Length: 215
Image (cartoon, rainbow, N blue to C red):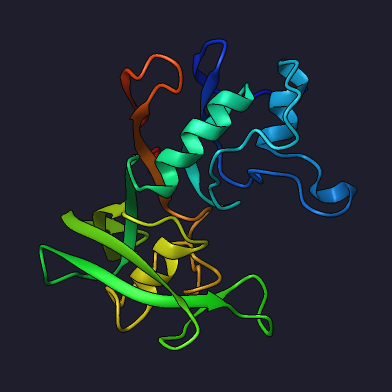
């Protein structure tokens, strides 16, 4: 039986390091039933219908916090909605990046004609904001790529993937992104949630967890 990689567990929350190619919550159909939350429920007697306080994309790896009680779900969800949670990601981007740091603010929405992609739409879209910082350039599969830190201030679906790839954003897709780039020569999407910081829902203590990217 497949298990989750637990970094922290108490009576209120569980913090896990999600592997790539795993859904955060189950989708429709038996073939999409395996997910972070279904694995959690096999391990803990969780009565919540959906213990996922937030989500990571199927292709994205890294840190997630899960609620084991209604109190934890409510208080953590409030922290996320008020943008009080610290989130740091690391990604490899295709090609060179001239600027050292910046911020991307783009409005986007779901594209019903190209599931599950999001598209830029300054009229009907909802705003998302991401700050970023260049770490350095390196070689990957005989080509130059750029390692960056990404700090999402909002938490929209595919936000980092759209904000990096769109010409009005950074303009360079993430290595291995088959939705917003060509995904060539990469075994996975090179995007990992490395750091997650929040206040414990019961004690109010600030907790911060880190896990390095494996690429």
